[in-house]
Length: 450
Ligand code: NDP
Ligand code: 2IT
Image (cartoon, rainbow, N blue to C red; front, side, top):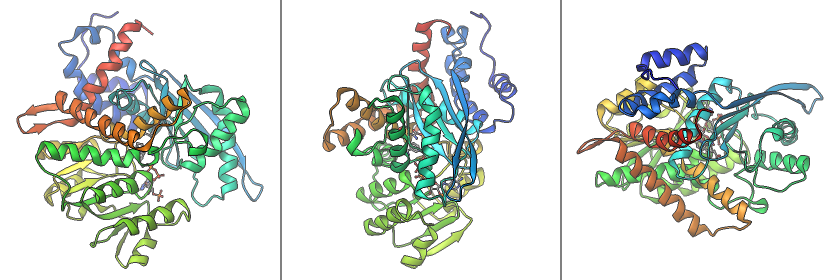
């Protein structure tokens, strides 16, 4: 045990950069958390002396492996697979699997680090992990995706288990991929257990898991609005992305009386001034999950604007929901949002706003819900899926809807408690970081030095 004080932020982050060269997304995620935790622990020697923050920023374990598969033209393809098991102080490692060409060790380390705090915030017993591959599912046939998933799970199955590490979906991994991976795990281990979440309803899935992340992100905004005695009624909203999180965010915003005017994918964004109503949203879901087409087709179908290669943040709005990917809101985007009168941001994607963009939102004192709090609804319902699997029962939809709503409210209230800076301003970034930290840190202290 060291008696030296925790260093200042620059020294701490300098150490993280040195130990993890070139991993810029990981540095960014750790810096965002450390900026709040270092002042918080300044008068709490137990966390300092036992180097809790430094230990949290070093994953428990990382597995990296080759994934070979054969494409439809009989070519042998080689991808890289990963699982980052960041911290299991409060429960089995838990977190999604991402298939996207931009996946690197740095990306998965940032996601596993963030997941540790997010899972703690849910109040459920889950540690933090994340996995994935640089495999690009775009343009691949179903058989190619199946062979890739089977090959990926053939290695991964040695490292996971229902009480060890429970993966789920993320970018590029939805119901289809989870089905293929669960089937391969079951076949290899001859066991039918809740080793993955986001499963189909026929084989142990939970109702509302699909909707939970997007709905939860909108609930968090609803709770922030309530603090200001306001609601979604009549608000113009921007949503980015057009996948699982984005489409379910739109669904809930519509139900609560808001109007969504944008959606995007990696090729650009659509601007539909009339609003994306329930029928148009069904079109998007079919486009993205069945036909696997591009969002530009929406503009052709409904006769609205398509802006190639751009993100939607310069469209005037009341509220914004980044639901695509990391660092999709730059400092300049944040400035435009604020300038155009945006009053609130709730992040469905993980770490969508650059550090300098977060500073812009904080300075403007607008409502800003960071991803680890705002998108925790998905993993929360994953936690409920694990409970149902262990008990071999299925809960009813109303019960799960209510549990999700209550969990999001608790996350909001906890973050607001730790983050209140004045009568009329809550710093939810600080609130979520501190609230997420305390439970994991106290569990780590109980275990001694491991
Ligand atoms: P999907 O694969 O369903 O959708 C991803 C969407 O984001 C697509 O529209 C995709 O466009 C777009 N996108 C992905 N990468 C990029 C990129 N580099 N640049 C521009 N657009 C991009 O994923 P999800 O909806 O599940 O995930 C979206 C975000 O939400 C991610 O940050 C994920 O980590 C986070 N999240 C997901 C949860 C879940 O339960 N699924 C839970 C919590 C957070 P295109 O099709 O062109 O690639
Ligand atoms: O980022 C996330 O929280 C997810 N992709 C969901 C993780 C999960 O285990 O449900």
